[in-house]
Length: 393
Length: 90
Image 1 (cartoon, each protein chain N blue to C red):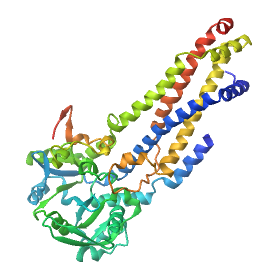
Image 2: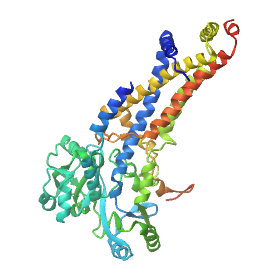
Image 3: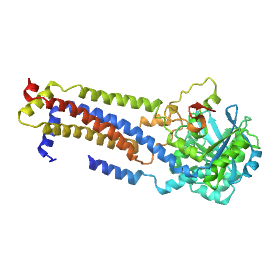
Image 4: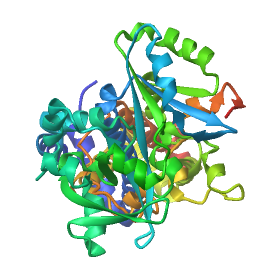
């Protein structure tokens, strides 16, 4: 097939001749693809962020359920669990949420044992201005960037008074804050010694929030899970693989916000297509008739239509892609961002890592460009099949 | 336009991609804390740590509570904790 530059030129002029109509379709298509691409860029970046750290999660997390609610695990279960073959270590964890009434925010409070030297050194890497000794002795805590900001707004510059379960005040000093690199993970986190966490939550000393199991050989995990289920039927075991699967479908594409977005976009898009398919305007028909009368073959007419629709639709696609990349990664997605951060007062910085999911872009392309081109080509082909005098009449 | 996109892509790829250093820090942090999920939504417990909570968590807050946080329309609950096949299980 020979490429005819004059046909391309004609197509361009034809687009310009139609002026306002071209602009309108171009604008709508750009906006639609931009909206879809932005939302998908955000969700893919969040997924990427989650998947990066999944390797370092513990192999098994054990929760105890009673009457359908999660309750604390007695520490005396640690020993029998350690006896199961293949279990490398069992760590009781103390963590939970602390509601700071004044600002109306939930902090995630995590208790740690910060006594080992190697532990302290590696913690140093993720924390700015951190004094190890302070964490142990004076009741220190390390806070996320968001927590620090909220506390400062409420005049807590270097300490914070927790109200414990007994109604007493528990003063904790801020000894450091998490690095900006872990802001998405740590924004609402407070890390403090386990002893203080027990005190704040008012938990019994012989209990833990949940247990974390480390397993050396990943192939043994399923056997270990069945052994735990046998031993403690009231415990729910969440494996790392489970969490990996749950990260894969973290976004509810089949209902809620995504569904409404997809429905509205598809509806708008197919309205444009329907308008195109339902027949050409008499003016367009006349144009085809004149071209045929001038001696254009059907082939030429279809080629010209193809160039015309391809330039329009592919241009819109490229522009939308460029705009959405800039919108999400340069401007941190204003407006759309609030869908992903919800109502929380403790807004994290929305600086997502740049990540492009190629299959997503291909899918977006296939759903928009070929469909639009088809919707232009089919009616043109119908009109071009007729004789020139029949069309012109 | 294609050139423009390529330039934008390369610029973003070079400046905004996750660096190895940041990746290591994240890994280190997760290794210490051991908790999944991002701190993007903190309005309710069952959204903040969705991988460790189930659809019944909301019942723990108050039996009459309806789901009204917009973020629960965006984030799907963790599939393994609540569903097995087509049955809803606690």
